[in-house]
Length: 409
Image (cartoon, rainbow, N blue to C red):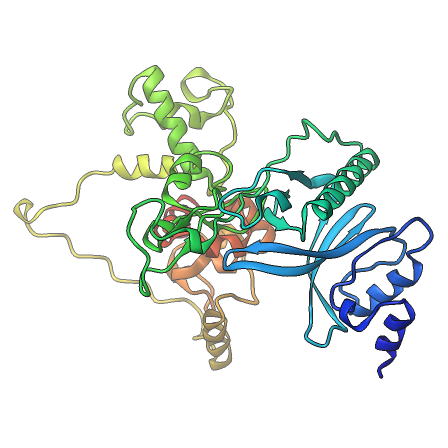
């Protein structure tokens, strides 16, 4: 008999109840159980100094059906764990602050026992849980309501009118036989996916788009359906100012008429709130790599004369590429630059002004096709308005547009 098993038996837990013990803990009676939970969870969560209110098993509705988890309610957090086969270890799945958690009697989709189920809503993840019977559901629901009110009071936030945006509850795979967007049936080849914005079950073709949903993750792009993408790509949820700039330009055209010719001036709002140029104002600063800079770059490109056609006569000879000055790079620096490009990054950083220069003047270890990788983290954030990890998630054509706007193409 292990020390942990002996300790759990000391707590009065029978062999059948060790996997999913069910108990309410009046104040002052939770000390030994908190110590046992600290051991059982392997230090994944710190129970020291917490107040244990209630614990017990609930069936959580996952995408593939119901699964039983051990739910542990503390004074300010709710967490649920998965029990191991030895019933002597818990794997902590999620921890939710009660000040950002709400519950509802409404359940989405088909639930086996509607009267025993309720929904747990959080900004990161929302799901339906099912109790053993109506009496146990009422106990959990009442206790959660009391603790949510207590946690909100401690955090000085209202229970109602909080302004929180909750994640969508995922629909069950078994409930969906066809894509919610294109209505094509699911097969072994046409697999099911979930929209993170609305929770609908969709096919791969209708879930190629990604959005940055701030209430789920402020930096990571997540899979969404075509309908949610069309509804949200113009606002801050998308996370790339290029679309916001383009839609703002469309609004100006609709209200003030067509934009001026690119040969005379950039788009009006690109000059900033204070005006500029012809009006004599200083104008607002245009951030490098922003949607404004990219649109102005597109206007400047359109203002260039058209390419010479064959009928216009022989093309002028292209200037020869100047030879790089100085001694050739050493084999060590060449290998270092190659390994840096293979890793998708570089250990050496250069200022933006250096990387914007001609390819012939670039340092020997800089890959001309990926100049943005050699910016420092701070300058990369200032230039593109996002971190390097988020930039990797952007579509290829969008990367090229943003690099062109920053002068790194």
